[in-house]
Image (cartoon, rainbow, N blue to C red; front, side, top):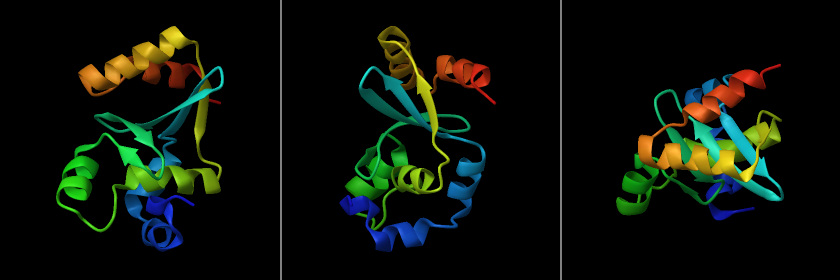
Length: 124
């Protein structure tokens, strides 16, 4: 198990309101493009690129965890592991052009309207 998802940290975040809400709202997204997987946390106002158990592009992770050396990472990093355990990860399959557009929107605009459109189409 990865350092940021060791059992002690997972226990601290299990039942955490923000994670529970994100799980119920299906905001842990795995985008597949051929054999490549890309992880996105779909926030209410911003989307974040996540390497589960390793890194997140959110300000909380970068500023508080990395810079200020806070003990625990953001809930996005740990949330993917919890989402996988309870089978609450949303999976999308796209081609490389769509994936590039989603990444570009997140990096330059802070959120992806393309991702949101795809999620509406793929809702059960």
